[in-house]
Image (cartoon, rainbow, N blue to C red):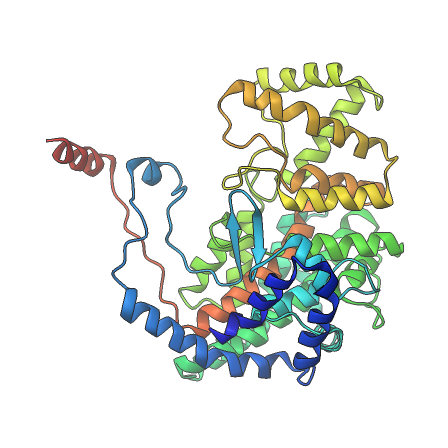
Length: 469
């Protein structure tokens, strides 16, 4: 349990604002003696392996719930069936990264400047170790990621083989598949590495993948929208700041937005399509590149990551038809028009959450701070007042509140990243941090091949008849 002791103590102190600064300083001083993330993990893994063995031995037969027919035919909603260490999603309070909420992460994770948005490298350290890193540790990790960021030319050639008009996610996934040629896990497995050491080449692959993705993603963006003119990595910038720079946006506020964006999109427990797909494919001992490419293909679906492009396109359709100064009554009419046409209002509702997504809330706070007069932000604010009551009136939606996608596009659009078809690529780069972290722990803990049982409708009917008799 020592693995979570630091975070647990920190969480208990977060309710005491006067002592927060002192508690975090103390924690960082204790942790700053070791700047190497790999060595930190090497110390933590044996303890967690024993913890899992004990859990299985002492409680392996404990029932976690009841499986119903509704769950089987309803996308396994509400069915507990997956171990995911890096984050946990509560229907009412939202996501917690290793026990810390988004507001707590914003308070304790180091920023590029004091009081700034959290650096994604800090969250990566937190997800992997369960510990809040010091600024020195985050800076060391930033440096390591930059050293891993060189992308082989054949990756760009693989992308160039596609039409420029191919969807950005198609080009991005192609680039990730091309990166797989360098997989250290595949090389080590072919040489007969012991199972107990699987986590080490998985670590190497995952960190290299995370480091190289902004370069690949920015190449796709520059190829499609900016005539193919690439921008080199800036060794003075952190992960989020460099991603913004590589895309061609050097405004300080845009860099801060990218740090926030990558952090809050990084992980959302293991049941969503992209995370689950990555875990499932990796359970067959596919390397992190193959597993993450599969995850990206899930993320590209309209019911998952593609939704963030749909939100901005829908909001712009509202402006095109009704103007920027639309009243709430006019907005109500437009929402009903959308629903009555058989479509959904994008950006509202969630498969697990039953309240406003805290990822939406922190983006709204960013907008209030940096772009309060932006017309599209003001429209998003009106939608928050208008849409939930309408969806509640319909009576078909369990969660009428806005999710993370309801806000991100408007922020990106404000700073000049207006190409909505590209937004899911940003989501993909971010999600690598969560999926990559969990894949390392999958291999460290020796999690097995995933193989659930499927049934036919006939077998379900037969079972239900017997249960009723």
